[in-house]
Image 1 (tube, one colour):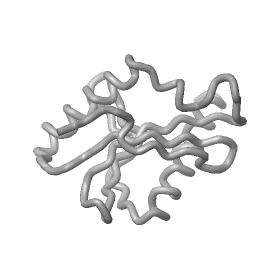
Image 2 (tube, helix red, strand yellow):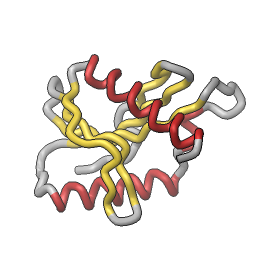
Image 3 (cartoon, helix red, strand yellow):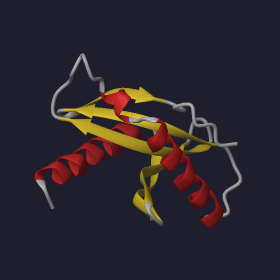
Length: 120
């Protein structure tokens, strides 16, 4: 594993702790669905919905290229495809959304709920 992969895994660990701190229940991590992957599958207890989380990690911030801009149309499409496969495989028919967690250094700097990918 490369140091970039190690750093990404560290970012996912930070993101999971953040979500647990908000009261979410972690249901899966690095869930592979054919060629796509969902970084974290969690259940938002307060809103009673499944949350499919993409985690983006950087060592430091960049004002000219904010972390959230790394999720482009192609990535959103892959995320929707992965979530659709997860929903079918798990026979899930309740509410859900796709969130983006941006991790810089050792902390979550942005949590974007429902990144425009309506599920239902």
